[in-house]
Length: 358
Image 1: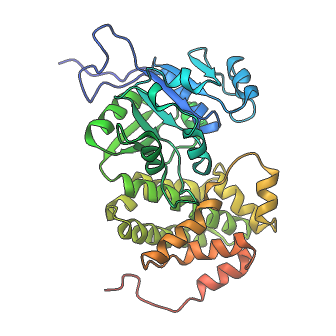
Image 2 (image 1 turned 90 degrees about the vertical axis):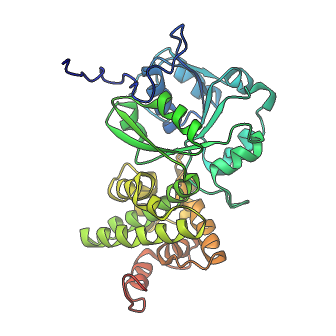
Image 3 (image 1 turned 135 degrees about the vertical axis):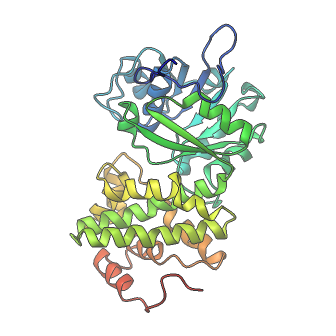
């Protein structure tokens, strides 16, 4: 009996069907919208698998840098092969695309979608959200925004999980979960899965997106703990009580309770609450060092989605009668009505109660 061998690093797996490619062997034609660190990293991953990849850039400078082989501003020191084609033309990159991956910050997603001519997108193209957060104006998730803007020809798939851009770009082992309709999630899994990126499926798109949004808020709190030098015990406390908030909000909004304990929930929460690579963690640490939120936003080019998600998550929670004390404390710090230290004290001195109320 032959011993199975793993594919070479970065090679795609064929475990979901004997071979999803057409009879002519051509790989998928894919589009990535957004050339920040995450969009660039995911484009690199897709290109390594042999797919045709077009990446849309908002700025001419970014497109030129990618054509020269390096996204200096957003993903430096990571060589970009010619297989990743940078463009400023949305029509060009969406035409004939089999899947479109949206790696745009949630607060800007709708404005980018408004520039896309729906007629350019094939009827069978699968929209995939790589974004994490909730739009402030509408309180909608990325997939809801995409469905609304594109007319839901094919409902969007949420692809999420503990996945730092630099590590995905470098081919480090990563797991993610694809949430949506069965046929779409299966197709996405077959497109992106490799020996370095394992993808699970779920029909709980709602739960995945809520987890992905709220964990960013909790990562801000983890950064504050680090900045205040509160120790490892506080980080563990934050993760476990933050998980309780994830569970409550996901359940209240119609998601599956178990999703909070999965890849997009606990998995991503642990990663972003324990690593300085997380932008939200970095932002929280800067808050703890005394930097006002508006100053941090103005000084850094990167976006910490948790800052924009926190007030929306709190509003949604209040609307559904859900208690989110950590998110509420974060909002107070961002708004300048409390300090990180006073918020930590307030959380620790809340009324005593059972861990699991009956």
